[in-house]
Image (cartoon, helix red, strand yellow):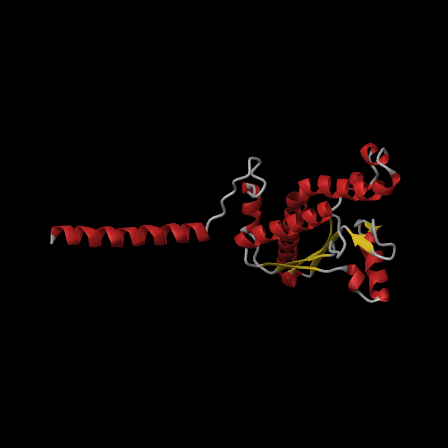
Length: 215
């Protein structure tokens, strides 16, 4: 009888341990990379806790014929956005290919993006298509909008390594280099835009309070 009780106890204990481990696994982010590139900084997590209204990222860095490195860059952007969502369910995003837009809308969008510092380049392989290296972030009821550039301006220019490649490969090399270098700063760019939005909200709230008291 004692042995049966012990066996039952061990089975129940095993089930509890397994369930606990499964809950921990499903609710934990384990980063096994040496560089911890999938781990958000403490500063980023702190900023995400301050979000109190919906933040929406519309990313135009999307295309059907991206080079492998450009597609990796795009995937890393989405991975990071998913990571931000893990810490704040108020964050939403969408990827839009500007080449799917009607011509007039596309022209207007490209003009607006470039006026706000987002680079739009020719596609390396398709003559009639464009690549928009960025998008917009909006912050809820505060009517805050900011253009986000996902390509550092210094990466826009061709590097020596690309210029010494055969002419047929220079275009892909340049685009791959841009994506490879720029993705190092994705977290900083996205979280900095969120930080600015929160600061804008705080300044606007103080301004409204001051006006009310002044009356």
